[in-house]
Image 1 (cartoon, rainbow over the protein chains, first blue to last red):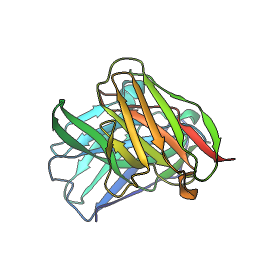
Image 2: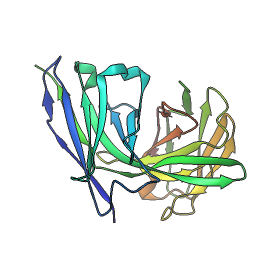
Image 3: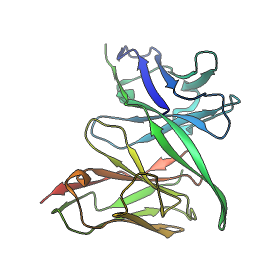
Length: 128
Length: 107
């Protein structure tokens, strides 16, 4: 059974870089047909998609975070990582890694993506 | 970005009740709509995808309907473990966006 586990620094100073890693166990991150995502949730608030990476290393990021975000893949270690630069207090949140899978339908035609497996989440606090 | 608006923000219900949560998209998204359940301190759990398809292992008391801009999540015969916060999410295009959540509380 595939599992995801976040790790990284729980406290980051303003203007520094937030770094998190998501270790994937029970399956290969190199297998096609999935994307690997980062999603965050500020305390007491809703969910925000940060971005994702596919098995070939192709990435997609939320424009709201702009060039501050980098997601990378480490196939040897079967993990993927998040770096968020120039953090401020508004970046304080629980950060989840999640796998997205898709359902293919011919009627109506489309690939319907969804987040089907999640890590437990890692709280990152931005404070001096 | 596609804005997702859920209503109500919260509701009170009793075990055995039927509960309905709505989600509206700011533009047409076809059936590209997913529903998640989140309990305090836990990660969200996928309930339904493609608006109405039940994820494996999810009780059939959960159902979804709708298309284009208006969607509904229905919980038939609410159970104790169903008291949680529910989020809709569109996968029509990136950035993927979520509704603000609906908290189902015990009356």
